[in-house]
Length: 506
Image (cartoon, rainbow, N blue to C red; front, top):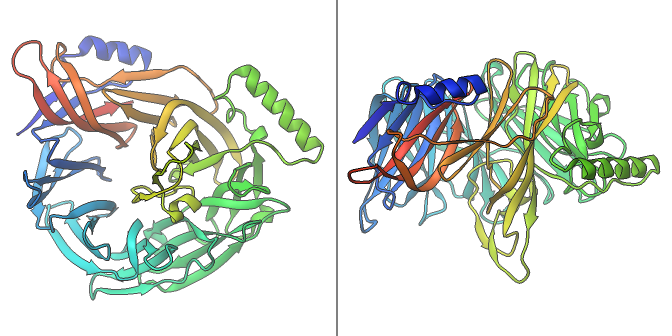
């Protein structure tokens, strides 16, 4: 049973206080009667300000399962619902929306070469489901769609190296696309650009000592349109990059560079695809106003003095940062590159869950990786998140930082969501139990104030006893959707266990 409650009147005082303090409000909440022990749920934001909820429910023995898809509008009112008959052992991997369809790809627990793709018409709710056998891979890292054709980055079942595949659903034909060549090569970005009728693939190529970037463009049929090498400048190795949409003359790469140790970022670069990296802009970390603001002021000052002295003496910097890029954000005036700064945590003589070889080499640029049991990091701790604003020519306009405390993931996936509001604010947020921690950036105006909100329930005297599988996604125009399972206890009467979605408006 679904129940939507609008919270405007009930929390009028709190909303007024939030408006005065420019804190986010929670105008509406949806509760669904899902059993946490038997239900997996995923919330997906759609381009028309609506949400798609996917939920899989299994029976008590795990021998049967139902797969449901429901669309809700911006007020969390149900628009339509449908279901698909997918094998019970299937699990959700990725989605991609190419209007008017959203595509969801599923893998099978018992057969790593079998995949299922559901195509949903977002207007009517009608869906089509097809099964594909992809013999070359045993895991999927990324999934994009261009004019109804599928592009998949997967793991080579023989060598564990990443592969780029093209799948035509009309005839089921699968072909391997020319992409990664050497053992030190990996993917950095995969972007569908329907306006310019192409898929852009950014690859990092390395021999272990230096690194460069290569950009390949394919049409919807998987035919190679162009191949572009981005050469390094002096002793700067290009590590990873995001590509902007646009035609041949306006496309840009925005990414990071290192020096001797290719594991660590020493700064950021931008370059036009019409030229090469030697004509681009390079910014080392010391040139950034707020990148080091996660430190205490005295430590930051010492670090800056030490690094400036090393650079003046011609020595290599000691700054060591690993970056997990988020998707590049296109704004009316340019671009914003968000990233999480992390370091791996180890315990001696321990085997733990770690990312697969492709994810580790690629610094985790894709979500939903399938972890493998191996000796490796026991977790990935974040020090801070950053955002860099550029104009359309790749000139750095500002940078800002969000200090993070005790934020750890056990595989290298995103721990926070980043949204761009119409008024130019950059909003970062992550969930923890019944709270949402957030940070609002106004270009380079730094603040280390800790900002958080507690998720609201239907009644002000209700208590959240426990929270499970909490999540948050960016939605539209500075709105987020927080979701998960909760055990809620009212002041009187019986408690309830629900799946909730709270709209959070900044």
